[in-house]
Length: 71
Image (cartoon, rainbow, N blue to C red; front, side, top):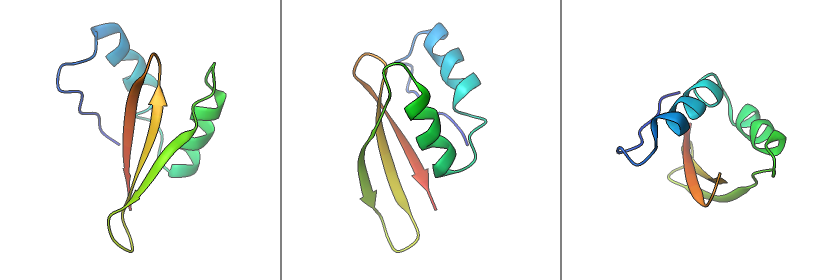
């Protein structure tokens, strides 16, 4: 997994994401990670790109969103 933030995150928040999100290797791990947060983060949207690829959008920490590209 990789992270693109377009320089919108503080260094602290980027470091948090890098340590927590980059090790996740599957959509199941992403969902479990989101539910373990306080408050829990649900999957807000699944956008079907084609029969194999989906984008999964989750709200994260103070109204920011994370988008996970899955195949």
